[in-house]
Image (cartoon, rainbow, N blue to C red; front, side):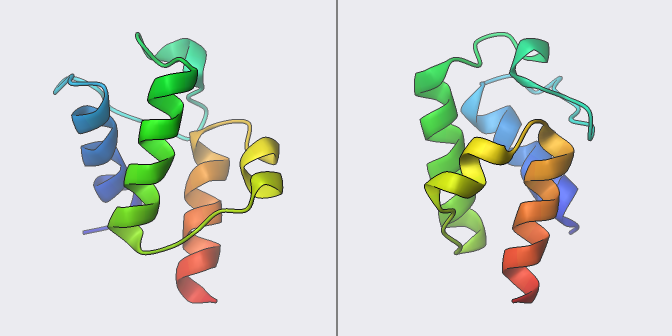
Length: 78
C-alpha cells in the first residue's frame, strides 16, 4: 500500500467519510469538517500510523496534502 493510499484511509476515518479521495492540491478548505480539532486528530493519527513525528515547523509549512505526503515520505526514508 502506498503512502497516498494509507493517507486516504486515514482521511476517510478521521472525517468519517468513505467518499473522500485525496489529491496533492487538496487543502482544509476542500474537506467538510476539517477544522483545528480534526486537524490535530488527523496529524496524531498520521504520526501513529506511520510511526513518525512532525515538528511544529514542519506542520506550519505544509500547505496542502501533496506537501504532507512529501513530508511523510521524507520521514520514512530518513
